[in-house]
Length: 175
Image: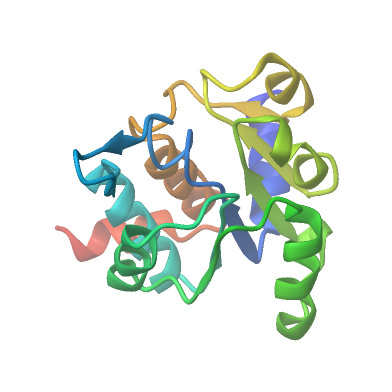
């Protein structure tokens, strides 16, 4: 899909749903000697999320894995919806979206692996990182330039802001 068509789809997005491992992170899990799990998050992605939230876009995290670090990071960024340990992401999405009054057709999904396919196939805008599984890239409306964990989220957030006509207002704040 060309950039104009992607931006047209993005303009109507009310809810941006992100996977974590392979999107916010490079997909690697680091385990300490004591078995404690650690992840690295890109700070550029964090600002993108904050800007999206400030622009009035609902943001949700749907992760197949549960972790201690994820809710803390998302709370710091102003993300109110963080569903973890949910392998059936379509079911999790429907539970999340119903009370918000938002449909899949008003949602953008960013995912990198097979478990994300049910969401990516149903949403208004399906986005995959450059290093996503080949089947995910095939389904995606847009494949980002960046690989997971290296600014994918920021790229998506900025594109959504531009599509909504909110980018200039964001930039005015930093002049």
